[in-house]
Image (spheres, rainbow, N blue to C red):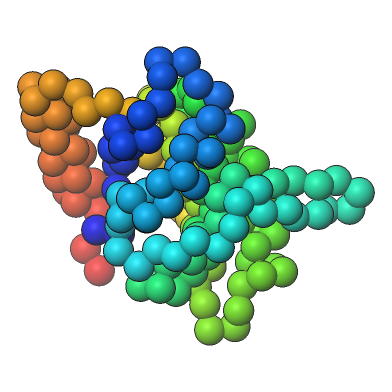
Length: 169
C-alpha cells in the first residue's frame, strides 16, 4: 500500500496548538523521517510550489514525486478537520500539474490532503477516489493501544466493505 491513513507524525513534536505553517516547518526539519512515514518511493520536489493561473498565484504546500507510482504528489496540510472545499482546491492543483508539469511518460498527479480528522461519509459522498485525491488523518501523538486497535479494526471493516461493493470484471 503506497498511501497510508493515518500518518503518525509524533516525531514532529508539535504543541497542542499549531498552525499549518508550523507543521510544514517541522516536516521540513525532519524531511527524512517524514519521507519514510509517507511510504515507499517518495522524493521531495518542493515547498510552497507556486502555480500561476492568470493573475492569481497559488501555492502547493509540499510537492513530491513517487517513483513507484511515476507521478507527482501534491500534499496539502490542514490543521483542522477535512472540509468539502478542500476538494476543489486540490482538483485545481492537480489539473494544473497535469497540464504544465506532468511528463509524457508519467501518470496523472495525485493529491493528498492531510487533516487532523475527517468524516468518512462526507469523503465517500465526494467520491474523492475518482478525482485522484486521498484524504488522510495525521496523528501528532501516538494514541493509546486500544484506540489504535479500534482504528485498525475499522480500517479492515472499511476495506472489506469496499471489496464487497466492487463489481467483478
